[in-house]
Picture 1 (cartoon, rainbow, N blue to C red):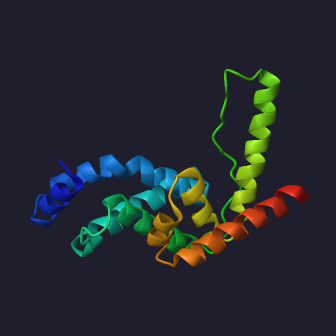
Picture 2 (picture 1 turned 30 degrees about the horizontal axis):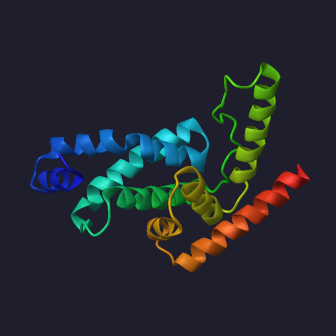
Length: 176
């Protein structure tokens, strides 16, 4: 079934079809939450809240954009609310995924992992909007226009956010 058919079925009262949306988009939501939040425990709590809010928001979905864009928008909003409510910065990325490669030797893999850890830690120090725009664009391959749609802001603002995020990343990484 297409996303549209599932949503229409859910809105018509078939609540069990909602599980298909959760299964289809769970990894996307969890990955985005992890990239923005950091901690595994926070990710599970926030991802669960995303799907609760998505269920409530489905009647407002107008099929003018892709469901994934709608879900990303809700995820970004939920993460923003969660971070504001918990009144804390994003934790250091202590569990950043290791990217081991068979083409590198053990020493090269260790160096690579250390550099990736520095990058994740630097990203976690960015302001929320900069971090979100950078993550969506860089890690999720969103176009600037898609990022603007998700963040509900102008294309110009996205360009400025990503420019400042890259500039701040350079500064953080050179000071490290």
